[in-house]
Length: 114
Image 1 (cartoon, helix red, strand yellow):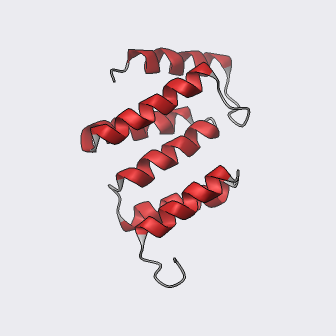
Image 2 (cartoon, helix red, strand yellow):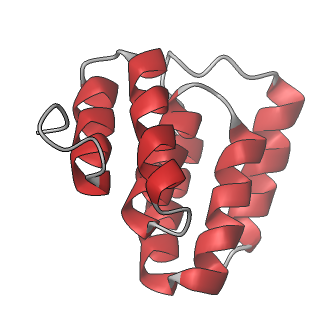
C-alpha cells in the first residue's frame, strides 16, 4: 500500500498497528510518525501511538496524547483512557517504569473522567 502511495496516512497507521502487535516497537513508532506527518491531527494514529507509548513505558507521552485527544476527538480519548486503565491494572512486561512513576500515572488515570 505505502509503496504505491506513500501519502496514505491510513496505510502508515496500519503498518504502525501491525508492527506494534508484532512487538516491533521502533518500526511501529516510525510508521505512526509518518502518518502524523501527513496529518498531525489524525486521531487513529494519535491513539494507536499512545498505545505504543503505554507498551514501552512512555507514560508522559501517553498522557500528552490523551490530553490532545480530549480536545480534538473525545471518543478516541475514551478509547485511550480504557487502555490506560487496563495498563494500570496490569502493566505489560515491556513497560519498564519506576514504581513512583507508575503510582503517579495510576493516580492521574483514576482522576480522569470517562
